[in-house]
Image (cartoon, rainbow over all chains, first blue to last red):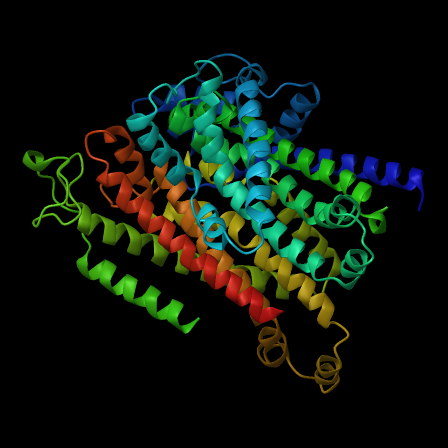
Amino acid sequence: MGRPGRIVSSALGAVRALGTVAAVWMLVQVLPRCLPEDPARIAAGEWASESEVAALRHILRLDLPLGRALLDSLNELFHGSLGMSLRFHRPVSELLRAGFPVSLRLALIALALSAALAWAMAGSSRGPMWLRAAAVASPVYVAGPLLLWAVAQHARWIPVAGIHGWATWILPCLALAIPLAGHQSRILAVRLGELRGSLGLRAWEAAGIPTSTRWLKWLLPGVAGPWLTVLGLQLGGLLGGAVLTETIFSLPGLGLQLVGALSARDLPLLQGTVMLGAALYVAAQWAVESAQGFFDPRLR
Amino acid sequence: MKRFWIAAALFLVMGFALGGDGAVDLLHRLEGPTPAHLFGTDELGRDLFTRWWLGGARALSLAFGLTVLHLVAGVLGALLVHPSPWLRRVLLAFADTLASIPSLLLCLFLLAFLRPGYGALILALAIGGWIPYARLSLSQLDALKLDPSLQQARLMAAGWPHLWLRHLLPRLWPILAAQGAVGIGAVVLAEGGLSFLGLGLPPERASWGAMLAAGRGFLLVSPWQLIWPSFGLLAMLLATESRRSRTREGDA
C-alpha cells in the first residue's frame, strides 16, 4: 500500500477513536446507575432532605429512563457541553480547561525526562539491571514522598508544594518519570540486545560501517517501534499518574481537581475528567499508530 | 518460582500472625524504633511494626485474590463468547472502551459512590482487571481453532466440559499464568495508589498506601512511617517483577 492507504487507515483510526470516546461517555453515564447506592443521595450528603435529593436526581438525569438520559447527554456532548459542576456551578469544560495546562506540562516534561533516563539506563547494556528493576518497582507514591524527604533535608531551594518558578517541576516530574523510565528501559534493553546479536548488524560491523550509521540506520529504527508503543501507552495513562503526583506536590492540575471532585461527590466533573482521560488515551494511541508506519516499513 | 510462592505464603502467615491495626497511644506518638516498638509509632501512637505486617499481608492477599478473580472472569468470558463471532466482537468492543479509561481514574470514579471497604475496593479493581486475561485467552483460542487434536475431539462429539478441561484450559494456562504474575504486581500497585489517596480501606485499617500518605505529613519529625512501607512496596514489586522476567524467559 502506498501513501493514500496510510492516510485512509489513519483517518479510520481517528473515527474509531472518536467512537471510543463517545462510548466512554455513555459508560460513565450508565455506571453510576449500576452501583448499589443512589448517587444522588450520596452527592446530596447525609443531611439532605428528600426534595433536595429529588432535585439533584433531576439535575443528574437520574430520574429519566436510561435511554432518554443517554440520548440527552450525547446530544449535550455533541454541542460541546459536559454539563455543570455540582460544586462550582460552572461548566465542566471550563474547569477542565483551567486544570489542563498544568497537567499537560507535568506529563510532557515527565515523559521527556523518562525517555532520557530510559536511554541512559538501557544504553549501558549489562550494568544497571538492579537499577531498572528498582525504577520499575518505585511507583509515584513511593518515589514522590522519598524525594520530598531527601529534598526537605538537603536542598531547600527546591519548592516542595505549589508552583514557584521552574524549579517547581523538578521533583514532580522526576517522581513521575522514574517508574516510566524503568518500564521503557526494560523494553529498550531487551530489544537492543536482540538487535546487537543479529547477524546483519554484525556483518555491518565487520564491513567497517561506522558506529553512528549503525545506530541511525539499524538500531534506532529497530528499537523505535516497541519503544513508541510503550511511550504511547504511558502517555495515555499519565492522567492517572498525574492524580497521585499532583496530590503529593499540590499542583493545581486536573488530578488535584479530580480528587477535589471526588470528595465533593461532584458527579458531572468526575464524568468529564474520566472522559478526558479516555480521550487523551485514545489520542495517544492514535498518534502512535500513525507514527509506527514511519519507522516500520512493514506497517505501511 | 517455587521460592516465590514459599516466600509469599510465609509473608502472609507472618503478616496475619504478627500484624494488627494497633491501639492508639497518644503518649507515644511519632517515635523512632525502640525495643517496645520495633519500627516506631505513627502520629496516633500506633505500633508501626504490627501495622506494617498487616498492611503488607492485606495488600498481598488482596492481590492474590483479585488476580484469581480477574483470571477466572477473563477466561470464562473468553470461553463463553468465542464460539459466536458477534458476541466476541461485543466483548472486545466493551473491553476496548473500558481499557481506554486510565485504570486509576476508573477506580476513583467508582469509589466516589461506594461505601469504603473490601467490597468497594474489590469491585473497583475488578471492573477493569479481567480485560488482559480475556484478550489473551481470545487470541489464544483463535490460534487453537485449527488445532488437529481439538478438531478430533470435536468430531468424536466431546462435550464442552471435556473440551474446556482437557483441551483448552491446559493450553491457555501458561500464557495466563505469565500474565497473572504481572497482574499480582499491578493489583499491589493500584491498591497502594488508592489507599494513598484515602480511597482504599477505612482509615483505621492498616495499609501501606495510607501509611505513606500519613507519613508524608511528618517527614522531618519522624520519617519511619514513610520508610517502612516504601521498603515493603519496593520489595514486593521487585519480587513480582523478578518472577515476571523469569516466566518471560521460561516462555522463550
